[in-house]
Image (cartoon, rainbow, N blue to C red; front, side, top):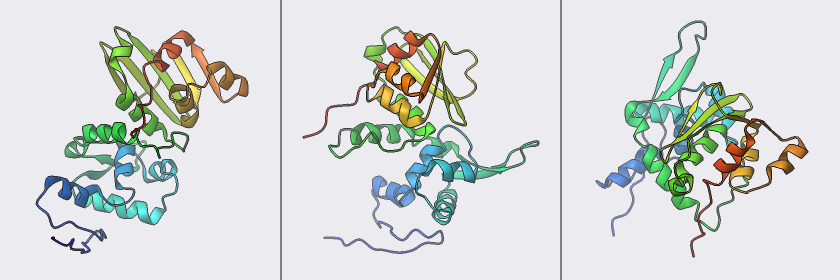
Length: 229
């Protein structure tokens, strides 16, 4: 049996699999703790360091710096400075970095079947949007056409459903038929936990503006898969 060789490279990654398998090299690139979640938070566009740290619950500034440096050295992430008046440094995925999205979605669907998966844990605004694209059931959506807006704290998102497809993006919900205002875990509880909307509104943790029947129908497009085993 070939033993795993352990090395440490210039960007601090302590484990490398000296194996020609593409999957093994993929783990060399993104296998460090937090790396894949950093990629997830960049899936919907550039983010500042402070934004990433805020939405990655539990990560330290030092570890986040290390992961960003490692992903940048690997060609997955790049840095750039936004033009005035923002004039701030942001991190974003390279074109190649974005190509991991289908892998991320398959991993999410597969892991959701784990008996140990706890959907009540904290979830970020980007993560809940990515989950919509991952768990969307086109058969349930049928010929539905709708635009929904989500105001998740400081994050504004727009979700479009049409032709059996779904797309989530950052943006102001100006053309949305319904706008949902709530923290990401509350939205997850409504969509995946099927907690009644009236209950959440009564508790003051969610507000719905516009055609609430659109959001009620949207919720039915998502159901957690049966647990494995």
